[in-house]
Amino acid sequence: MKSHAELEKIQAEEKISEYKGIYGPKQPKPPLAKNVFYAFVIGGLICVLGQLIKNAFIRFGFEPEQAGNPTVATIIFLGSLATGLGVFDNLARLAGAGTAVPVTGFANAVTAAAMEFRREGLVLGVGGKMFSLAGSVIVFGVVTAFVVGLISALF
Image (cartoon, rainbow, N blue to C red; front, top):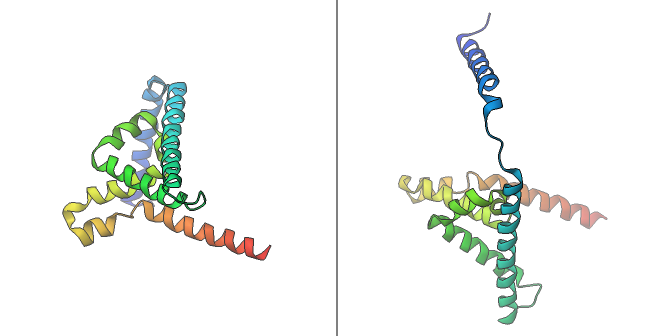
């Protein structure tokens, strides 16, 4: 015999299935070509901005191999600033994955979480929730870098 919670879950799934059967075909199709175009153009412009910043650091005396680190830090700062000013959300609505894939998406995820929970205080709000979304990305990146480094050292 099924519990009350299991029966409610089954009923909810049946209602969702019924809803999709009635209204699913009537939903408008997203403009795929337009979305791909905006993602490509805006993502490309973010990368061009990154290259311009890197070239500026090289002009200021950084070696080309070393100019990448301050460039990434600057792009993260600009992405966080744009999130704080409310500009990033509008850009992301237009560009979709074009803003999510570069490091600006990471900056937006961290900053948006920090802004959302700032009312709970600096430690429990901002500090505790800032990496709620981005934390898994950081852990995956560190573990992957370790595994790749280990494989590289062995072979």
